[in-house]
Structure formats: structure tokens, C-alpha cells
Image (cartoon, rainbow, N blue to C red):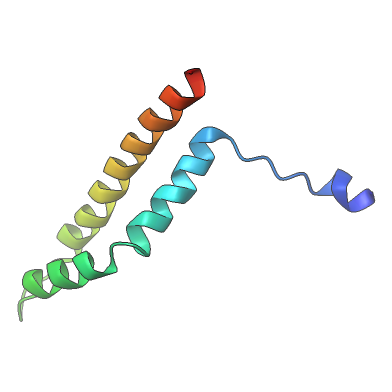
Length: 76
């Protein structure tokens, strides 16, 4: 009973969309990232900003799509 008062996990719709998005980006797209990073990584080139942009762009795209889908389903 005391533990329940101390630890009350609350996960909102945007929080759940963000967690789902991170899961989709990191775990479910491993083959895509392996293929993309092998093409991008050439010897002598520093592509860390571009690699970060790919991760961030895909994460933001998934978050946008999941947020739209969640808000539509929540309104119905």
C-alpha cells in the first residue's frame, strides 16, 4: 500500500507514443540502419551529424504518425 502511494506510474498518450516510437526506431529498424550506415560510412569521412539526422528524422516521423493516429483513435 505504501509502495503504491510512493510509486504511481503515469503514462500519457504522448509519453506512450514516444516510448513506442523509440522502440520502433531502435529495435525494429536495425536492418535499415545497418544498410544505411554501411552505405554512408566511407573511409575518411566524418558522418556523425548525418547519422544522427537519420535517427532523429525517423524518430520524429514515427512520433508524428503515432501521435496523429493516437489522437484520432482517442477522439472516436
